[in-house]
Image (cartoon, rainbow, N blue to C red; front, side, top):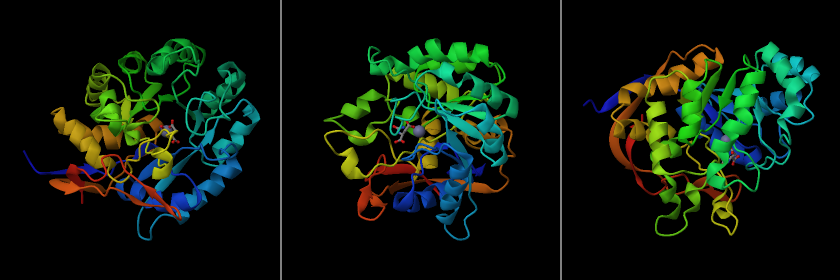
Length: 344
Ligand code: NCD
Ligand code: ZN
């Protein structure tokens, strides 16, 4: 087998770039790996207006290193108060999608939607305008076991939503279960899904290996091995519905290694390396380019990139920590450990 892999430059269809000094620290990693990235809007306070999205885009662009070609794709945080009238301005500002966070589902989601029916008039306007809906697909019902929240979301929210808005393009973000993978596989071409590197590489044992490992904790949480295998099957199937979205979500290491650990894995430093490892282990390296570089732009109806990147099969050690903002440290997933591929 060849020890280099050349592919069309990939895009990241789900990333958290944060703001301020943290943004300065992480944008260069994503811009090095990816040509474009969907910038998630869950800042404090969240990005809820077209003007905020435009200002955030400018702050991201200012953090891109000179000479690096990178385009952030902007999203808005859908709230109970986003109106159908807002949608025209959002579209005009070049925003590509709105993100649905069920209130309380994850990091910085307290402004999220309390009841999807409250957003129906806005979803109608989005369907008309051709804006995508990106979904954090977990119910927040405290009665539902944390490992079942995605599967329950499929039945309680996704199925009715798809029936009510059949032509709204929906991305089921960071899917983690066989139920979600099956749902998307069976859906029509208006439904897609992103898959993270950690959910392709690890099952929930990784969180508990020899002690509690906070850097493997993200939401939706890692699931059983049967679910990981279903995600591998979906990602390597060649189906255009599945595409790359790292969900790289940086939190300072003091916040991860804390009595209450923030949810999120930081993978922007080595995302393509981790995906290559997962695809290679599945004997499907030939499917990586379409997953990473074709299916995403096709679903979003954007042009594919034209320049290329190279991944080389080589052992190297990922730094254990990198600077994060003014005083903090950021620990990447697999930091201090060996990786088998390197983007050159
Ligand atoms: C994300 C974050 O930290 O912003 N965390 C995570 O565990 N994935 C939020 C999210 O995408 O759920
Ligand atoms: Zn996310």
